[in-house]
Image (cartoon, rainbow, N blue to C red):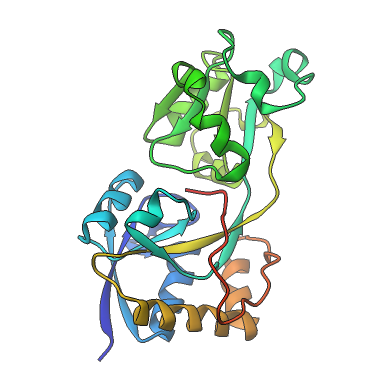
Length: 254
């Protein structure tokens, strides 16, 4: 009998969502396959992403999906090998492009009274954006929300000047009637790897080793892996097959 592991999930189409009453999505299907191949039974529990991180810290759940490896999270979590990639961008309102296209670097945004920046609570945005968001001078410019749609509405109404997101997440707003074609990626990072984040309080290195072995096998025998990605319209990421002792890489996601 497979050992159960509690997996936190957030409604985040097309990565994790319900369809006809069934839980599915790119991350859900990949995680389900990885864990089952490793000899575990995933028990998915819905909650906001910020709470996923908190529950992982306390050991109330065991795993979160599509996570970035940061020093802060490493205090209470371990990370699997990367299992997919994601991209991050600074999006602006397209009509405002003439005002901002001259920017040569993110640091030029710091301290500006005319540039408010929207971010999602609890998300990490990788090595490109992390130093910017950690700058104390930027804190008064940040507009933090729990969900993406309020940030996009603020941007389209020019009440803020930018948001940091994975452009692929805009598909979550496909039925909102928002003019998403008015969004423009001013600065885009390279694709970076994502991990399963595992609680130090409720998991151990033997479990991580089994999960890493499952990910490695999935990348060697790519048929099932690529079938899942294609089902959700995802591109095949340029993930190398990790060596057995490869450390988790730093990504640019949640």
